Length: 255
Length: 300
Ligand SMILES: Nc1ncnc2c1ncn2[C@@H]1O[C@H](COP(=O)(O)OP(=O)(O)OP(=O)(O)O)[C@@H](O)[C@H]1O
Ligand SMILES: [Mg+2]
Image (cartoon, rainbow over all chains, first blue to last red; front, side, top):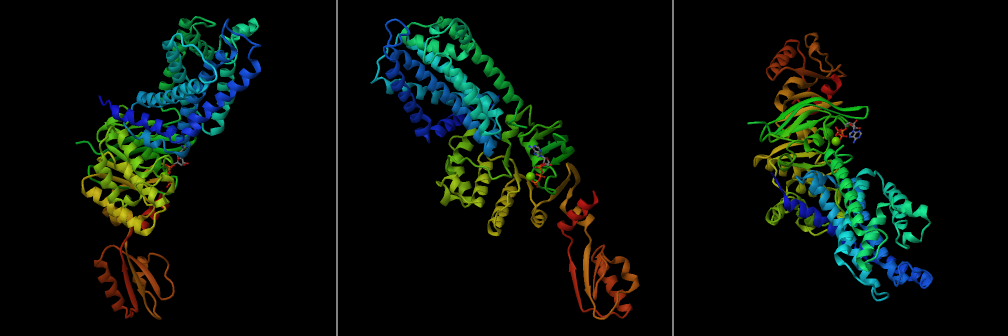
């Protein structure tokens, strides 16, 4: 058995280098965007909305913003990297090597996690001077951050493998990823929604990531963090399984 | 011992285009093999199947005895491929590119070898330049370097000299010839037939996805291309007895005869003397691969 651990680490490292070289766009810009969201929304809504008892709107908003940035950047990392390599053709350099299917999968997804977690913690850190928030259960925070970034990293990988043009990635991002994040309770608690929308939100897997993540901060959530964990973990497993299967079959990579 | 490359009954279609049909090919260890054929014949497709970049619809491929699908890791370790397209990653410099490529094979302390390839390919002055800033010929050399980072026993080069100037082309061929002398098995495609002729010991020709010829360079030249004798005579006609030898309809004072071998030159000269013809000029030309290629491509 040829483990080629070094090969895996190299691909992971290359993916990190790729976003680090343009960190201004890939890390700083999304943090700045999140700060703007925070300033505007909390200014407009502060004092008018109270989501959880004793939790100011600004504080409520921060974990949601951090998670949203984390998810979007994890997705962007894999989808843009794979699509770019495929379209420019330099993906052959990876495809020619003895990297296994799972190493290929893990290297891309873990690099997406790294960027997602970096942006997410950047948002938390950068907003801390404006609003202070508790950190009731750091383990849950990390768990959901990690699972969320892995999930979106995997989705991005799938999308990058499938897409033949950048337009298709942008469409996927605009019509699926962004609506699902916005409707997942980044800006509100689903308890403030009419019943039918509450039920609809519970079909959105992103809702559980954000809700569980928020639980880690406030110790309060819309649904039990344990069920969220099971749902998010299950979704990640299923999605990873499909992605690995496609990679193994060479779907659109080894035509 | 199994051959370095073993292709058995391989077919591949892209939609309705049958890119390859039932290809069989063995390339022996240490061989210098040319894969020739017009545009769209299926050369790159065959290379992609050997490299595992595409999947065959039927048949099997082995590299150094390793099946390219079932035992892909070993097969890929044994193979270096220089792709036809000038692809590169604009994020990295030449040295970074080579270090990463080497890392994918799990070779992390490979700087000595990387330095040596940079040296041998005249890339040292560009080692720290970004890939984007290189000229096409330089990028081509980096592609060659990338294919060599893991010292593969088998190297496939898909048109390594396309768009490369004469100087560099000579240099590249020299380099590839040295690799072959050091024991690497080489397969290449090219549209420069003289180069294939002078370098390669065996040749396969593809036409519309079929291997129409597979033979040693020497046999091919013998089999398909006669020795040519170009004769010039002033105010004379070609004797009737020599008419059957004409390679093409003769023109004013100039004829080209196709000969079996050198001995036949004697016979022609004797016949001319017997018929009292005076020769103004004479030139003997060797068979060449271009003629072989043309006659094969016309014939199939
Ligand atoms: N990915 C693909 N999708 C669809 N058709 C393809 C694909 N790759 C190759 N083909 C078709 O398969 C045939 C063989 O192409 P291939 O690239 O192997 O030719 P080639 O011999 O390398 O030609 P050239 O000398 O121009 O490089 C062509 O008809 C080509 O259009
Ligand atoms: Mg080609």
